[in-house]
Structures are given as structure tokens and as C-alpha cells.
Image (cartoon, rainbow, N blue to C red):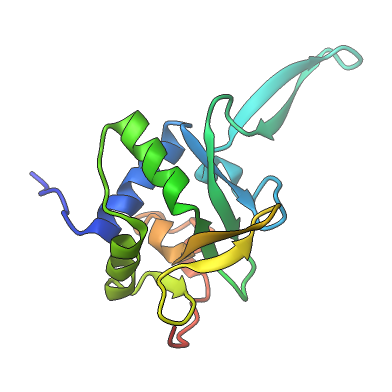
Length: 165
């Protein structure tokens, strides 16, 4: 039997993966639209009958009732998930009945696990625009969300910056 990992960074990542798989949360692309591999980022497929062709058309949509957890930048030069910690902690608490520490403790844990991709001086968070005024986010390496057992997962081959943060 697998023991539960109590490290805050790993608990956060696993909780976010659960939110995504259960369509309770989603990430947008860095431009605010559908990301690459949208199903991995919490999006769902919607089917509609095309009256002209009499065939079903499908499109990826944000799941109804799901919360936006942040944005994912999948460009080779970035490979970062920008997670809004306050929203994410609230959704995890409400939907999964799980408590996580505050953003600073999560940031410290992400940094110690080598998962924090960027931060501002003396802070674990970074200020970025997510389609509105700047927000404080945790910038997490995309590889933190990759499935290590899936050789077809494009995020497993992503380029990770080795620059110190």
C-alpha cells in the first residue's frame, strides 16, 4: 500500500491533478484560451449535432462549474504552470475537503522540491497578468504535472530551465 506523501508541494500537485481529472478545475493557455492537450488541463469535450452534415461535431470547453486555477505556458522557452494559490486552496478545501498550508509555505516546499520555476526576490510568488490586473501566482515547472509512466506525454520531454531562481 502506498503511503500518503505529506510534503505540502506534493500534496498540492496531487490535489490539483485530482481537480483536473474530476473536471472541478482547469487551466487556460498563456493566452487565456484552450491549452495544448486540453483534456490534461481539466477541459472537457462537448458534442453537438451539425444540422448540415448530420454528424456530431466536438469542441473542447471549460467544464461547467469548474474554477480557473491559473494558466499553463507550454512554450518550449517557458514550460510553466501559473497557479493562483488562493483560488486553488479554496477549491481544494471546498471540493476535496483537504486543507493545505498558505502560499508562502507551499512556495517554500515547491522550492525545496525543485518545482518552483520562477519567483520574485525574497518571495515565493511571482506577479503576472492572467487576463486582467497582475495576480500573485506560484510558477511551477510543467514537469511537476507530467505523468512519469506515460511515454507519449509531451510534457515528459519538455525543456526545463536549469537557471537558478
